[in-house]
Amino acid sequence: MNKLNHFATALAMVILSVISLQAQVPAGYYSSLNGKSEGALKTAIHNLLYNHTHVSSYSDLPKYFQRTDVYPDGSSRWWDMYSDIPLYAPNFTGLNREHAFPKSWWGGSTSTPAYIDLNHLYPSERNANTAKNNFPLGVVSSASFDNGICKVGTPVAGQGGGAQKVFEPAREYRGDFARTYFYMVSTYQNLTWKYTYMVDQNLYPTLNAWSINLLMKWHREDPVSQKEIDRNNVVYTIQNNRNPFIDYPELAEYLWGNKKGQIFNESSVSVPGGEPNLITPLQNMELDFGQVAIGKSATMRLQFRGENLTGALSLLLSKPDRAMFSIPTRTISTSLVNTENGYWLEVTYKPTSTGTHEARLIVSDGGIPGSRGIGLKGECLPMPELSAFKALPATDITENSYTANWEIPEGDVVDYYVVTRTRISDGNSSVEELVAENNSLEITDFAASTSETYYVQSCRLGERSPRSNEIIVDHSGVTGVDAGLSLGTVFMEGGVRFVCGKAHHNARFYDISGQLVMTLPTVENDTEVLLPYGVYLIITDEQRVPLKVMVK
Image (cartoon, rainbow, N blue to C red; front, side):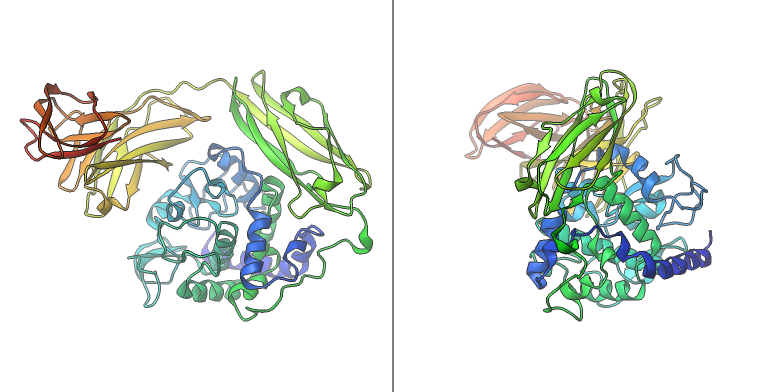
């Protein structure tokens, strides 16, 4: 599909959106936003959206994408907003799981629900994803990457927030990205930002001045499309939350635009006449637990929120595979459901045999007519066996960045890789884990470290392979554990663990006053030494420049 056809499709969807946009919003869903403005309105959005159902795992995202990001024409073609290369589901080869709002901006922590929030995760062709990096959105004046759909390059004057490059999506997707960013800075306004290209450290307005101008311009010029509406509805059945800036585009005007300071009120947020209304879950919502290894379990949460319910809700698990699923209660009282935050029910999938399992959670009573059914499904696989593999020397080393590399483990099915990075600065070390899709990962904040090390593990169904060898990276070059004489340490509680390519001899340990406290005839890779709390300087015959370490 060429860019002209992309535009024609998007235009048709805009026309359809005028008809269908409002009809998809569940009655009562946005009632908590009524009567609020500016910061209070944004916080109400945060409170409504933050506690959502988490998708089963990062590994299972391609399966969810088959429901949210495939063209609806029956072709099975991935709807990739980053590229025009024809790739087809269910094969995910050539694509990445792309955080449209870069995960590094909050430090990349996997512990926040932002990490696997489908409202900002999209399939992206690998080369485009690599070029995008963690750059902010913006208009490109001079492109270093241009695939006909998106560009990366030098920003026009006044944009970029200090970043060297910006990412510019195609015109038909600029509004999509703007509304994605509105969702993220509202839902996750509680995060601390590591990079502030487009955001400030505050609850409101969070977006900084130049990004408000850009995103509101894109939001107005590229209205909500049928693609966004359909995706929003599907994500709601998976995550139990919605993007309000798709449901009510004018909401952005109340926060950052020409209605700022005015009170937001939405007329159809309640069922008329005080009738019992179960806002969520909806009929035929689905909890998909994804793939789980035998002997393991997975738990997902489902929100129950209503208004004017007249009695407790009754819950029942029905066959065929109901024994594989469990819930902690069979009833939920009205005092829990008839509240702004509702009640979150934990549902657990603990399979006792391999294969695909399905059941249904039936909800009834409470004054609602009839019953509602929520689908439960999961797939149990044998426990994976993952092989050890080799980390390779870093490449493209600059003052600010380098690329970590590793071999692809032969014959293993791998969901993703975890790169464990140890940063060394002034004798102190810190460890962080980063997720990578392919067999390389660009590190963009190397300037803050004196030197670094990394090792890699492959992941499948939540299990990890043995650790690879460790690679040392410094600003003058790189050595691996099989070459070179560079000496480094990684954090070990109560002592130090050495990282070196070859054995070092006559190691001397001095305390901060310069007194010799220990000598060792030989130090090899992974040698561990226990030391009292304090700061030490270490010299070997091969390492004449003192290595400063802190023991905690």
